[in-house]
Length: 180
Image 1 (tube, rainbow, N blue to C red):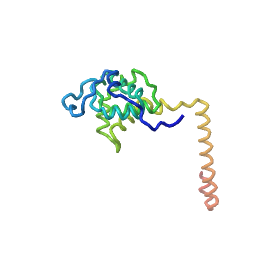
Image 2: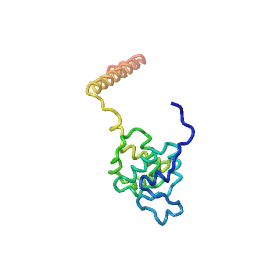
Image 3: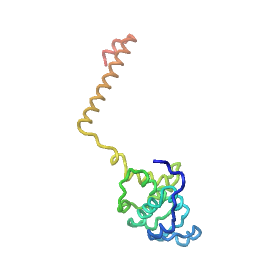
Image 4: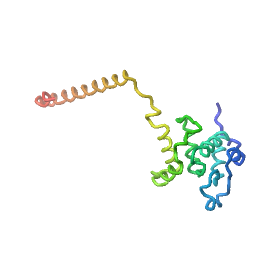
């Protein structure tokens, strides 16, 4: 499959309308901030749509506005973070995925901690940890695998003890070698 270098065609206003979202100019953000289904970042939507396609953008917007209590979270950082979660392919995308998550609270946390990265990156990391933590993503070992790992660890421990005993004996400290 060839790598796509040209941007995807994407009409963000049409996609937003399909999702029930009204796109306003960023200059109006202060007066209407926090209203549900209102977005002030058309450039972000256009960039995501051109980079990943209209279907990806539609999915990201619907995941935000159709989840319980998150319709007012159409902020740049939130849209970016949800897009990164979708692109990770680590999370099974379902309509109710964000119903139990307050994206506004996650965004406030990410703005507060920002560990040397952007708010969107911190949000994406927190969301991925919640939905795709190692306990969820990594397969559990069977009883046989756990027993085999314990046996390998025991063999390695005995090998280290024997090597230490040989080093001490070669150095002439027989009493220390016997004590082990």
